[in-house]
Length: 156
Image (tube, helix red, strand yellow):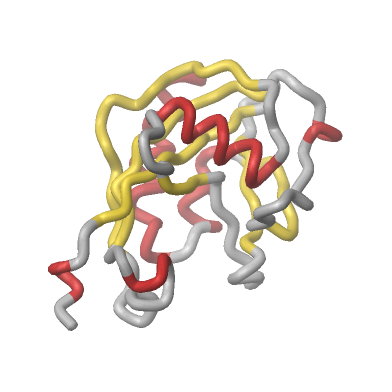
């Protein structure tokens, strides 16, 4: 099957900054090696980006108390590696095209709850933005480098 014929999945990504401008990352349940990522997910039918962002954040982290600092203008894309195409998203997509948001977490750490109905993460932590490209899976590294630049624009 030609992977280029598969569409991109439309989604959102959420950069959650705490009061010290550290970024929330979670360790995925389906890939428990030492790789961490920011919350992200697909749009449901008829859903706008902001609604999807808030829903995904609650579903993956339990976090509700946020303020949107910035909706990043451009869309970001990543392609799945060949060995994952056909496995992830039931083989319907070759990657994701995402709208990213930078948010400020207004709650306390005890608000974070990974044991949700659709649990995706088994652990979480706060890290410095510059470390994001070092903790993500390789196929999302370039996107995370671009996201670090966006974060630096709002925290500098």
